[in-house]
Amino acid sequence: MPSDPPLALGPFRLRVDPARAAAYAQETGGDGASVPLAYPAVWLAEPSLFSVVQDVCAKRDVVPVHESQSFFYDAPLVAGESYDLSVTMSSEETPPRLTMVGTVATPEGEPCARIETILRLVPRAGFGSAS
Amino acid sequence: MSDPIKVGDILPETVIGPFDAPSLVRYAEVSGDANPLHLDDAVAAAIGLAAPPVHGMKLLAAFEPMLRAWRGDLVIASIAGKFVQPILRGETVRLSGRVLRATENEIFVRLVAYGAARAPGIVGEATLRPRLAT
Image 1 (cartoon, each protein chain N blue to C red):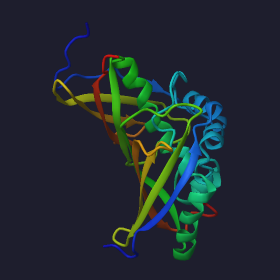
Image 2 (cartoon, one colour):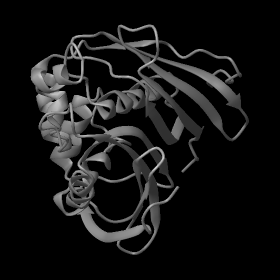
Image 3 (cartoon, each protein chain N blue to C red):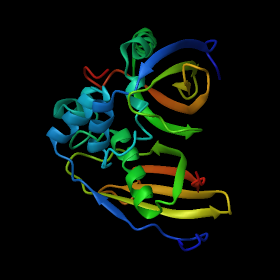
């Protein structure tokens, strides 16, 4: 059951930092030869985006718990290149969760990927200072 | 030429971890996911976990090299996972895969990650396609 109208965020101009992509590959078992498919996960932690999630959670006194994650690719991301990430964030009450659907496109508008993040919203009690 | 892929084919199992605290700190730094649940024993204990859980994304992302090692002639078009239950720091993780659908143009693989528990930690899926000739 939707509780709030979907919120459109962005587009955010973001770059695949080659060093960060290589480090991400190293920490996830990859060889660094290409940008990891899961690399856009780092963009979701960007303050400009994640601060919106934090605001929603603060208002509801909940913490977000990563429930599921999906990546669908039309074209691979390229290290050093910039992309535009646009996100639609919607919320549900039963069960309480946030769904973020992001589209990644080149600055020229060519679609590259679609990402979906579902965050379960859990009462803060018991989570200490987790955020 | 690679062997044809059939429904029911089992991917070679990949074993990763166990991941220690510095490994989780490094992932937190590179990913930006600094949720203390993954880094602080006291926060994990407060919700009844014996140790901090490994970031689900760190584990989901580990399926990519497994899939590439299996069939480098295919392109991974999508990868997805549900984080069903936590896999904890210090647990060895087994990544498995099984082909559920196979056509000329698309291979659909069920992915499962197991930690120490019998139940899966991650249940996921991937779609792979033939690499286009250039």
